Image 1 (cartoon, rainbow, N blue to C red):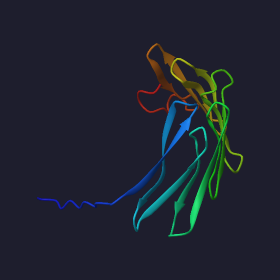
Image 2 (cartoon, one colour):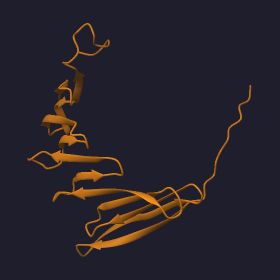
Image 3 (cartoon, rainbow, N blue to C red):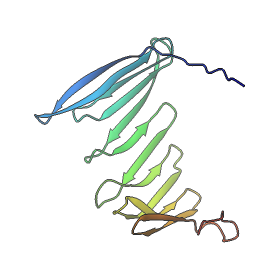
Length: 158
């Protein structure tokens, strides 16, 4: 039995800004993308090449903005959207891996004891205090969940 496949073709318009940073380094960032009659998004970029604002238009003149703030190392520390704010904290050693994510309501998840070889936290604790622990070998993670009793774990999970 033959099936009918429908394909939509969108005409897209976009524009880019080229920022010169620190002399010889160029960063190319999209400043707007539009599918006429469907969706439009514009962005703002700071002098370090970080996106600082995303605007999603719901009609020709009105938009909802999401704003980003960064730390010294280039990590997103705060994301403020129309109805929510999320804060990120990072490790104090390599300043790369998130250790805490907190939302508008103060609900937080913690990532602890990173294995820097793989960039994976050995323990994740959610807002309810449930723990997900990872067992690592030389090839990376083998998943284990200490919050589940052995008879509640799916087959193959240790």
